[in-house]
Image (cartoon, rainbow, N blue to C red; front, side, top):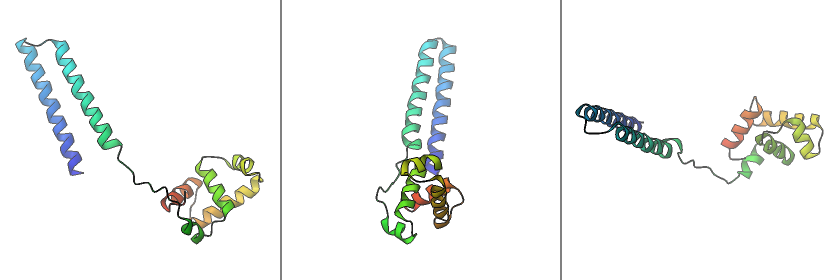
Amino acid sequence: MKKTILVFTLLIVALYTLFRISKYSLLVGGTSMEFIITAIAIVFFIVGIYINKKSLHKPRNISKEIDRQKIKGLEITSREYEVLQAISEGLSNKEIAEKLFLSESTIKTHVSNLLVKLNAKRRTQAVQIAKDHNIL
């Protein structure tokens, strides 16, 4: 956090200095307006690239390994796991039923069982809990 504050402080000071220099250059008359605008645009472009690469795209340590033991520990059946995967794809109960060739009431039962087993109140919360446990 301190590093981020320091970086942004330095960027603000650098931009302020650039604006002050450009104002002085205009008063003296040695520099054209187009050159000053171009220099400011380049600085903002470089700052934007820096912020994009360093701040917004932090690498995530995503484990692609599914914890099969955790699935067994939570007593999630293979069919419930298929339903959970379909929920994570954003499918509705009707779409899941069509995909798995089951009735919609059966899907509702599986979803209800998943919510209980994952201790979740909503489908989205169940997916998040499953991802936290590395079972999705």
